[in-house]
Image (cartoon, rainbow, N blue to C red; front, side):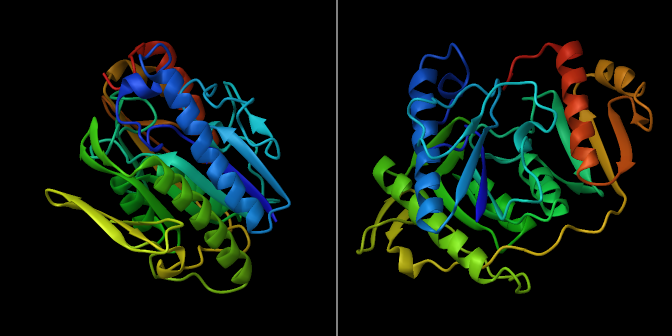
Length: 325
């Protein structure tokens, strides 16, 4: 079983602010350690589930965040940018499962460090007229390649967004958003244990149901995270309750599996903060101007994801905005 891990940073255990996730931030170096250890938990769970290989792709910002000397030595790392497929660099149909570690919700949602790829420069994205962020585009691309997404870790908003796309994906909530830069955090040991145990369970379920139809049942129940503890305990603050339960008590449904989707046309539309970005993107063959700040293009997956990476590089060159501004 070959497993692919895409590792973002905003949804990592304990991190809530740009200072935690951006180079030169006061707590960025500590954030890099936290990110690496969350990924290590997923790697351990994958190998415990019987994985023969695990590839990790650093998918956040400069894509030089994970610390190779602290990363589980069984897992090779794709590090640095630019990468043609960005957050999915290296993923092919030869893989059996994708795990998303440390993900965040899309722009406009009340999630920790929520945005879509470029801070405030991207105001909204639609795939076939459905609002989408990094989670939805990654899921659609992986599915087009025939590889199911089986796990996502992040805050409660990111987990809800993933389940809205595919209720069969197992999610691990490591923090509950109180605002865009504030959260109620699960204790670090519990969060790491939950990622490890849930990764193992999700991959075991995916392997067992490789030829089964997709399930419509969500995995880990909303507001709870499974840990290695045999007892249940909860800590409440205001309206948020964080519950610790045994791994056996959390339900896990198989994610969508099967061969790659037949190629079909999709429409991708992106609304930018700056009309300057649109004025440059319309020079790309096939890209149409919907209005002064929105472009649209038709195509198939994963080609649209590859083209969207070109959009990002053009926008970065002409906008010059800092993340989360």
